[in-house]
Length: 215
Image (tube, rainbow, N blue to C red; front, side, top):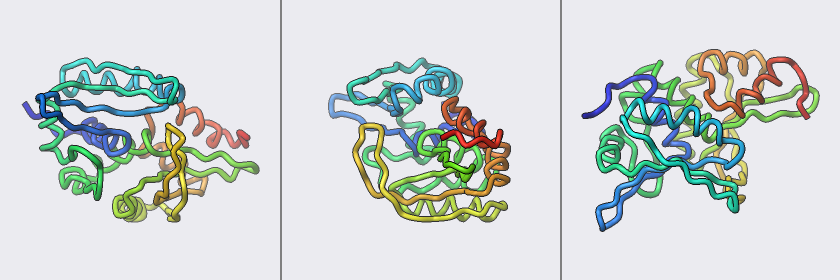
């Protein structure tokens, strides 16, 4: 049965847009996986993503850690969940030209939750000397980044855009589109209004909140 459309489900779709992937093989094996850093994201995967999956889909995922690649994967093997996510707007295979599902895009609360999941997987708090910190989100999909920027601008954020290079969890370098929130008041607004469930990112935000350099 398709789960009820909720903020928690919208957040999970954001997680999938960030570090998720799903596909199936000709032998009938269906799988969904969410990648993360083997150290920085371990607590997030164990204490947040796993319970969310249990609540939404009534099953327990497996956790695979690849320390040689600094990565971990939360994995679901389920044809049922595969088709639920497909129906909710998440594509199978390579993620290209992603489109935020209408049920999320047309609901402010769901959109905020979606950004939370996306930020917790693909976002960061950048700490600089003299307290010039920022919240950043970088993705390969420029149109998706622009859609998020437009939404955030509309609800009172000043969001800067630029293109940059990024080293992923396996240390591969790629060109991505980035948005940043640089003003401390707006960073505080972001964490109050959108928030984070990733302990690593929460700890870094506390440095910004407390007004310390953290360098």
